[in-house]
Length: 130
Image (cartoon, rainbow, N blue to C red; front, side):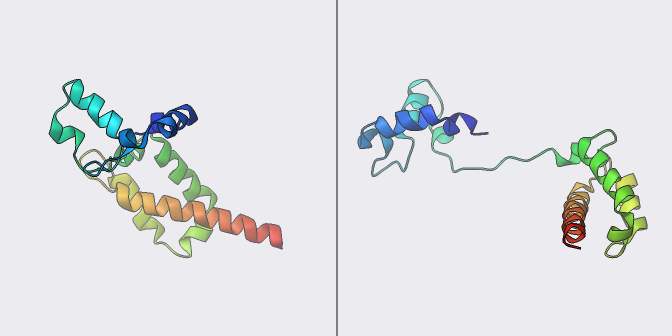
């Protein structure tokens, strides 16, 4: 997570640094930060590793009591007719029932949820135009 680097004061400080502390021929960015990390004992392999993403706990969000599960269940009730035009609703219910810590259906459930949200917004926009 990178919120500290979004702070405008951090950006202003970084902009005020001489260019030699912002980038060098060997280092592409965050030179001062990297030097500080090395000075305080962080391993070189950590300081110079490539960027890597981080996983979201989507699996847990769709477990019983999770917010994503509640949202999807609400969509399935409120927009059942619209969603049924495009999806096999019994299969959707089966995926939701099957999802657990040992059976991960979160990727499919996420797609279904985002589709349901889009569809709900799209139908609402159509109703406003009518």
